[in-house]
Length: 499
Image 1 (cartoon, rainbow, N blue to C red):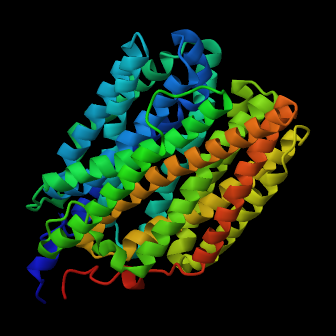
Image 2 (image 1 turned 90 degrees about the vertical axis):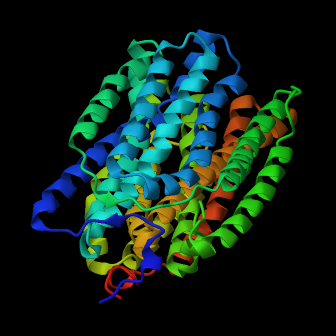
């Protein structure tokens, strides 16, 4: 049994699993899961807080939008670099870096007197969040044997689905009794506790390898992914300006979008030439696996649908139906909890039956709900919206765990860190794209209907229907892609070190 050294010099190598370190591995994964829950919860906590911040800080919706846009931008820029960090550094220092950045960002937000420092705090938080998710994914892929990965990925899916879903509910509860700073003051001790526990208890479970850092690739990825996400969020803001008949002093949204696309293309060409010598910042050989590529495309569609729906449903419930912030948060809570409850069962079913019996029905449920949402009206009963959101949550739960497991399981171990980074980047860019697309469509259609003499609330409902219609068309592609995802054979080619 000889191992081709060249195959493994591009990625961290996990220590062999024995009875002695199995308990250690479980502890490491548990601590990473808790920490990831805290950082992801924070990603959506700002959604329902924007109106409060506009009032308290005396800022426009455009300025408040940067609290979310800045976060997404930072995530999109930092995640490609995490592939390098995960190869070069050991588990504990990467964890300590992620939670230290997140805790520092939370502290800055808690004490900030105005919007500028608050945005800085959100950017620092996002840096920590961007490192945490690929760290969790890569560690699980290195530590958990292929036959029980579905179960562990199910636990990760709980974190990924429940945390963003209960974020708006928690912020709604906090804002109904306390001022906005408490959203950060309450998270800070939990983040510091996770940092202290992890720094003490997390053991190094991978062997770092020499990985060169290509500065040109870093700069190309910052301008490329940053410009692309900035341009996408600018489309949403541009639509708001058009609707308010304002003139924005900033760049037209298409300019950073085009710059982003050009620099992403340059980044891709650079990686293709560097990966021949295992020097790529983001190794694109992951895309040679058809299963990985199809899974990532499906994930992009899901993130667009999920983020787009997560921003439109609260707007519809508050602006059209007339619910309060707290009522909206509580209304969206059952869906998040259902996703969390489904995830472990979905993981076990994946281990037994593979992805197809889960992903195909999940994609069909997603598409049915998206088409159903194209008919929402002012007088649509609340219970019907609640049922739709629950069904959508079940559909997403049936897909996330199998997609994470099948995509990464199709890669060789030396590509896990690159695969995790690529999934993370795709999620952030697709989430930003979904948010921007849905908001832009809603705003432009609403403005057009108001200009045509439609009453404002009915016009808003019309704008939301159009956005959901486009979302429904996108969801059809998820149904088609679902039939092409396969279970990795024996965990994946190259999963064993003896070849």
